Amino acid sequence: MEKDQIIVGLDIGTTKICAIVGRKNEFGKLEVMGMGKAVSDGVIRGIVTNIDKTVAAIQKAVAEAEEMAEVNIGEVIIGIAGQHIRSSIHHGSIIRPSKDDEITIEDVKRLAHDMENIVMPPGNTIIHVMPQDYIVDYEDGIKDPVGMSGVRLEADFHIITAQTNAINNINKCVKRANLNSRDLILEPLASSLAVLSEEEKEAGVCLVDIGGGTTDVAIFHDNIIRHTAVIPFGGNIITSDIKEGCMVMQNQAELLKIKFGKAIAEEASPNEIVSIPGLRNRAPKEISIKNLAYIIESRMVEIIEMVQAEIIASGYYKKLAGGIVITGGGSQLQYVKQLFEYMTGLDARIGHPNEHLGRTKVDAVKSPMYATSVGLVLAGFKALDERENQYRSKLKDVKDAKPETKEEKSSGAFLSKFIQKTKTFLTDDYNDSDY
Image 1 (cartoon, rainbow, N blue to C red):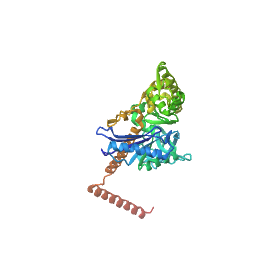
Image 2 (image 1 turned 120 degrees about the vertical axis):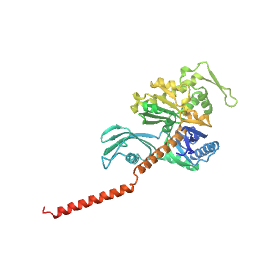
Image 3 (image 1 turned 90 degrees about the horizontal axis):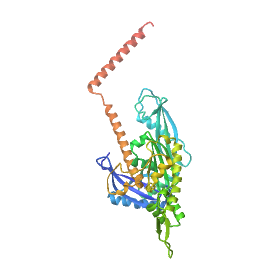
Image 4 (image 1 turned 180 degrees about the vertical axis):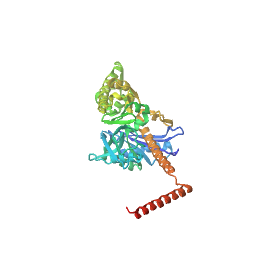
């Protein structure tokens, strides 16, 4: 991989559109060169509902990132989320021509490619095909079959689909913003690259990304993603509850949530009061922090119950030694970690995208709300590394299959001629016999 290779991640979210420009430094860490963000008015629960507003927001975010990084952005890696995302498990198999030959990367790719062509319900497009465990000649539990011998190669695949129209609308917005889409990645997968460690993925962990419009769930075990889900509630629904419950403006409700919100009402002081400016010629409105916490807690309990239901449905509830990692803007709510631990019975922590970050011009990217944006850039570098490894592997195969030397060619030719003469002699002798 080139040292000056630059990757741009574009997170088209419900509350914000964020562009991050990054490159790898000499230590292999991600160096954020620039970041731009804009208010997302044309996206609801991950789905583009207004093309023009979304295009304008993308252009604004990209222009800010270009100015800070002092580069021209032409290609981006896009994140996709929304309640239209679906995941399912499918089984696939291929028959190889010879059991003596080793299973190659090409065989594994052919099996995955076959799964990409399976029939999906109308209006849905496959965006990810991720192998679980492989089976070679009915021997199961194999993580990497390359190099093994066998005729029948099978695998269970975790297939993620999205609405075709949702994908088309995102691509249309990106194209109108004069950008090319290099790849489309499910947002919880991107977030996992930014905030989860390899040990957590091995032990078993549930990533919960609380965004503005949706809450994304991704469950890992044995370093393999086992389950994904999108819950159609996020931070915005909590803001709406505060707006109605406290009878304030939308922007006031958002500020109340950010500055004074608590996920556990017991932790709020009953005597603490916040004064909100009233409308024209009206007295200021006084809001009880205790009542505010009750409103937030009731909605957070509902979201956590849905997360818990997804964990149980996955069948991995008893296998999550790594517990829960909470990220996204909603993870910054006070006491949200404690509420998750109390309701699920699992250990929890807040996921910050710090582990893979090196020197950065913007300290804000270390916040959980930018985990997806950072993860998209990391996903781009991961894809580059995989391509480079495949290229090196093919180059090694070519070098191993080096041409014969003159001595080998001459001795091989002599041996071939000797065998041919011997064969001819024996055949002629057989034909001349009386038998």
